[in-house]
Structures are given as C-alpha cells and as structure tokens.
Length: 298
Image (cartoon, rainbow, N blue to C red; front, side, top):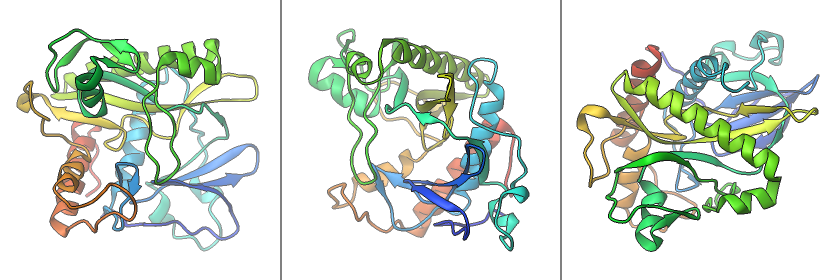
C-alpha cells in the first residue's frame, strides 16, 4: 500500500532545502537525496493536509519520464541504491518509492514552461493582452484551445508562499544569458513535443508542463527535480476534451477547482482539504501513473 509522509526526518543528513513538495539533503560527492513528500501546493501555497501516496506517485512517474527522454536531454538521476545513503535505522519502505539520489547541480533560476493549449494563467494573460510572455497569439482563441505550435513561456521561481510570475523570453535572456536561455528553451520544447505525442497514443492530452534545469561544473545542461508529473503538468483525458471549458484532468486541477469555491485569498495558510477531495485527487494521480507509465502502487 502507498505510504504517507508529510515531512521527512533523516537525522545525520544535512537538510539544504524544504520546498513545496520536496525535501533535499546533501550527500558526499556532489550528490543530493531528494525526497518527494505528500505535501500538496496549489496557487503556490502548501496546503495543510497531505495526499497519501502522492510523493511515491510523483517519483515513479518522474523516473519513468526521465528514462524515456534521456535520449533528448540528460537528467539528474544517479543509479545509487537508497539503502547506501539513508541513515541507519531509517524505514526503507517509507522512502524507497519516493526518494532518489541525484547529481548536485546549479539550478537555472527560471521555471521553464511549455504550453500546447491555452489554459490557466496563459488563458488569463491572453484574455487581458492577446499575448503570453511577450508572444502575440492569434485573435479569437478560446479557453483550452490548442495553440498553432507549442510555445515556451518562462516564469520566475517564487519562494514558498509567493506566486510565480510569467516573464518574456528577453527577461530570461537577461537573467541567464542568451546561450543558456536558448538551450533551455529548445530542451523544454523537445521534451514537451516528445511526451505529448507519447501521451496522445494513450488517450491523454498534455496541455502544458513545467520543467526545471540545472548545470554541472562544466556547464552541461540537465533536466532535474521532477518531470511531467500531475503536479507540474495538466493532463486531460482526450475523450472528454472540448474547447471552451476547463477540461476534466488527471492532475491537481481538481483541488484547484475546489479551492476556487472557497472563501480564501490564495495566501497561506490554505484551507484544510476534505477527505473526499483528498481521495479523489489521489485517485486522479494514480490513474495518470497507470495510463502513462503502466505502474500501480496498490
């Protein structure tokens, strides 16, 4: 059965970052231990109660995609057994499906988003300006409509509790330089196009996805953190998709939609999620994992 972990506790290891979902520990040899907890963030706020098994599902689907796309872009994973790095006495069963050993990289300080459909903050920006991250789009597009071509739309990386902000590609160039910005843009779109075609064969539309990248000491680019998960992507069932609405999804949009009905200003603390919403969200994550990767965590 899936395990539940709201916050990791690994005495003897140096905790260097506790993010919205992942806890990151330093390991010898320029390596990291990344633990995906069952915390859920929405609108950039960590909600108070966990989604049981969510961290396991995120890790398993990320590992699946990292393996499938390694021919396109190298990734941060290292083939190191967890038992070799966990502190003595740690419950291996609690961590074995939710933790990975990775290279320690210098993060590219930008959220790298590929969009194939007009939804979410992209739809809001388009309605206001007719453009998205400085890219002028055709007039008359509707909510959830497929774009003529996938587009790269970077955003700032917000701290926990703050909101990411869409920025133009030129702003990204100013932040990281033209060469690295171009590498990241091309890698993001290559991964999205490949994954979208793969998912389409399994009846799933990947509307958009957010990727993160880092570089090693030599400047080599790697995709890192998570990849094409329900936390970082919008997955729509192709047979229920239609233009003009926010389609049903296999991701945390279910929680977002519930939160939109609450009297909440989208700042911390977030509201407690009802048991029914937790159960249905976990089921959505599990369905995506099975449909895309053929993996069940029953």
